[in-house]
Length: 217
Image (tube, rainbow, N blue to C red; front, side, top):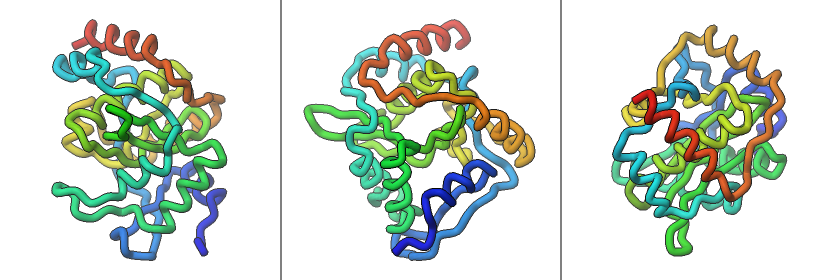
């Protein structure tokens, strides 16, 4: 039985810490509070010209929260560039509970009836904590991220937490900010009521985002 409760996990998010495990097979779960925090500023989110074209092709069927478990499984599966993962059994169960409680959300890329990529995270107030993403087809996770940002902006979210900075996220404009600056932004964000948009048709939001990004790129 899990030692951590989903309610405790929500409290942890509210003060700026998040859970991890050393590996998929390690049963120990610990909380992380980085000195520098990765965030993706929603108002300066960068979409390259090539990705803009990919998104406009609408090659993927974008859905939200239709198979959260499968997205979790996709994020936890080993890949060549990442043979192990931090999602152990306890963390898996915790996020499934958060999804059932209405806090955990997935953005999914489907193609020919198959889930080929996506991401998941946690919404609390107007803060969204991005947890992990995966791709089984080129650009699937990138397209999912564009749709996520469009949904967050349309829903009134003010903070997209990426935890750490990777080369993958840096291309979208992710930045590192000091721990206290992050906590200040978080404290304000969780006070704001925002409801994550889980509807299937988010294309008007995506078009608006791409238009605004093309004017600033």
